[in-house]
Length: 310
Image (tube, rainbow, N blue to C red; front, side, top):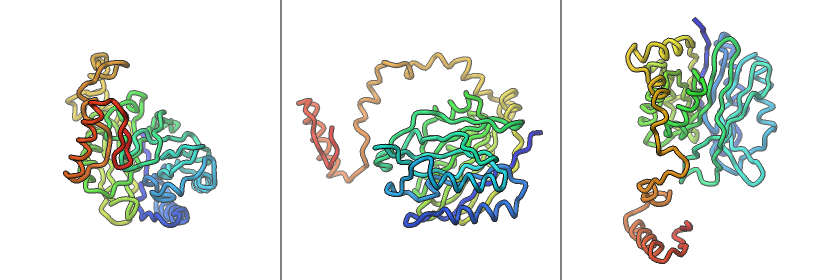
């Protein structure tokens, strides 16, 4: 058995002032109540909330404070994510800090929640890191998991535990809980989905095992939930199958060359027919948009509609 304890912190997130001091207080409480915890995870955009004007540069004060408290308690720390300002771009970025207070890696969210997460640039690099003598971990953020290729790639890179900060306060939270279970199952891994509260989400964080079963699901109030997992369960599942039945990772390995849609240059006429990525609107507005789109199709000249250029 390889025991490893991860504590998710589901807390209220303010959009009007930094949440750093509350994060530090929650960490103090966590480590005093549960000194056996090895890793602590916060929710997406927990540090400064969901407003772009709070974007910070890396390295900077946020990381420095998080590094200090990780070193103080000798824990692995994923302090959610914050908006990262890098030149003319803004990314949704999570950092990984080891027990010595060192930055191991930074992960930029690959799938910003377009067309709602306007102004955020997509990242392009996956993030996996090793906890010595324990196992390999991967990092994913919120909407990323709606694209199975992201979690599958982390699994193919050897990730046994997926750390997944999220910020969901919308009515699709129940759907996300089913996706979290599915990602854990088809990739035969542990999945830690940590949501925030208030402007940081509607809670209902969830932890799933490599057979897709829910190990813990939080409610809609502030919670600290420490879960000790046995990493060897992942190897066992990947060797013998989910509940000793399907072996999806091995089956994917044996047939992964059959997916032509991923080959560069492959025509994708159906996807191309779906139109641009825009916010849904009322039917009368949609009819006007479709008229504009029809004009574009006949003239091939760029058009503008409600601030969007096609």
